[in-house]
Length: 236
Image 1 (cartoon, rainbow, N blue to C red):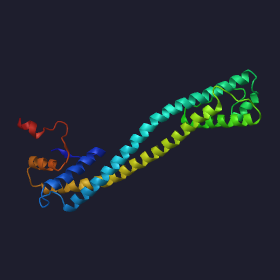
Image 2: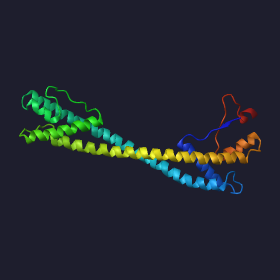
Image 3: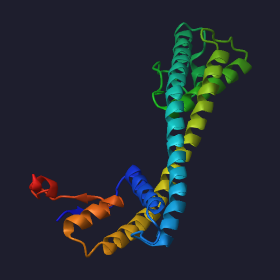
Image 4: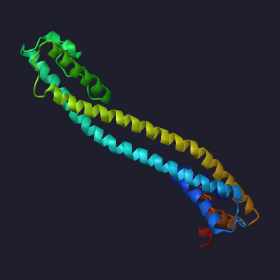
């Protein structure tokens, strides 16, 4: 005999709820194979579940869209910060800027490599250090660095940080929506289980094949074990 298995994906749960509600609309309520209360609960749950799934997908789509935009912004910001540090190092090597002034930027005077800015957090940290360091050096009477100018670096940096913070908000929204769906899934699973138990109870006196057919009309899902012959195949 085939075995019953509850839906294990969000879309499968949604289809099961829709089928239960549709059967209540299609069949006279007195002939419905499960209780009127569960049908009312299924209608209410269907609206709530559809809304939760829609909101979760919307959050996920928004996060994905802004993530691609953020990657482009980060790429350009990383380029400007890296170039600024390289120009700063060349100025020091040409004795145009004193080596000790690199400490204003949080840089080691004897190290002429670009710090690790490959991660978003690293880019935020070093971008801020470079901007603050240039301001400190200029306040001491230093000559501004050009190509790129710190103002240009700041514009790209500020756009990136704004996008980064917005992305964090969207990530939190997505996480909350996923958690909300997961919590509702517990209620949906319980309701589907109650409905399916009632349906099977209603048709328990029918022949196995007829019972299976009637239960499937209500959306119950059955699977055949490996090697088990499907009735339709046996009749052929």
